[in-house]
Length: 129
Image 1 (cartoon, helix red, strand yellow):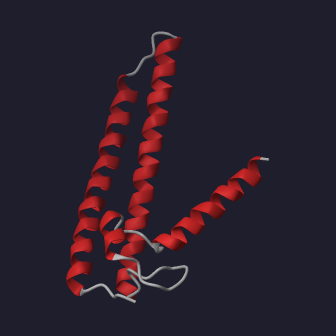
Image 2 (spheres, rainbow, N blue to C red; image 1 turned 180 degrees about the vertical axis):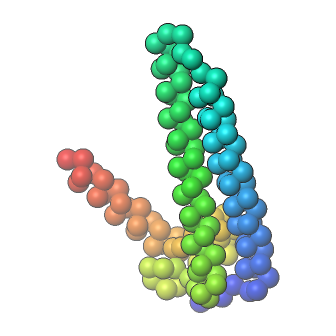
């Protein structure tokens, strides 16, 4: 079971910190833009209202994804502090460094992530039927 070196953890931490800063900045920018648009918007007709609602829904989706990313980074930081960063939360094996380079907040090894996504897809199909 390969263990991450302190240098690898340091590099991955820098990646997460930069991503955290970008996500927080994007959340602030979207929030300010939405606030400004709401203050300026006086819809002239139903088309303006529809466009405004579509924009707000898109902004909500962006903010929700950014918040999910921030939560993932916070969780990864907590795992790092606990000494479990880079260890799969499902099977306990190490997560490949290459996977963490692509997705520094990964909490599962690639095998367990595939199993998780497959079971999630099955649950969604069963819920829909």
